[in-house]
Image (cartoon, rainbow, N blue to C red; front, side, top):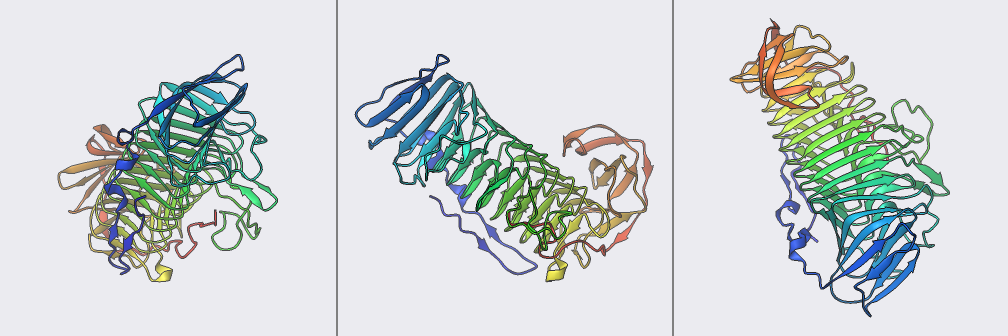
Length: 512
């Protein structure tokens, strides 16, 4: 497997991030794997599945629509699933990488996972690829309880694997999770092609010493998006959109995440849930959009996150944006939060918080390029926050910036910033920097002041009409806009100075 190591420059005013993983995905391309044979599994509404194409290397067990296959051969096998099962599952034990083609299949398992990929019996299959090929329209659903799970065996989601999941194909997959999570790999998940939708109503619960932490998509090692469409909705308490113990790579395709569930319990202490008070509970689980314990890299994906109870996007490590479009809206906490340095060098970024900071770095925050629209809630929170309490700061050296709520105290503003004399709610503004005009709509609430910056002295018009342009950030912002009307807004030089809610843990960091 390609190394995930990162080389990180530690100087507070400079950061070098080298990303070796994006250079070679050849082993994840299904065209580079030859499958020796195909095993066909046809589920039936009459309650009797059939299996064909197997040989002496397979041990096949069929009970109604419950299909279990143990493969002991040395070749790579493609399993093609079709038909419908209202009470069934497909379970595979294998020491080899394999493909699973979902060919207009519909599987519901009231008692566990719809598809469960294990290693050889009693052995993990970590490091083995399972290609999920989407053909036609496919549906998978789990049940509210996992009573089918053998003792000592993992079964964490409606679609689960001990090894890697790589998604491709031109079809679609809809996953409904009510008992645990949607799609989980105990290795990594890579989306290359296809449309995947996960609707999850599972809630976090505590059973003994174990805490269920439901998530629409989880790759333990990392999650990578190269292309395709990913639509995720979580409504349960403590649910998340995407999570990983490792890194996140968003290089292409589109991702839409909506998390409306409340937080489960409280993690107590500093950095607890908003309004969590002193109720300490080590089993607390926060409801976040994207949550990665490692680093987050955005290079080309279109990512839209809406979160009700906690942070929209969080990386416990560093977070960088060099391309694509990233929109994150949180009603209660930081819109985008990094545990380390946060760097924006390109792309389009909107961080909209109604309850905390827009952009919040617990290290340095670097804005070097791109277009940034940041909205903070109100004093002492800000639009762009860095951990000044820890000796870090915001470095603004380039790009186009609109910040409602101002900037962290002590910021280093190499590029000139200007504050508006006032701003109005729910109003369209036109910002012209050089020969380029942007249009943005202000929110119904937010902190002051309204700060703008670009590579040349900007002009600002209030109350404009927008006739054309490229819409982004859920149509709150237009690039290359054509505007008319409005009134000129007086701008004065701005050097920063808002309070901010930074500091380690200041962004609501909880353990989960």
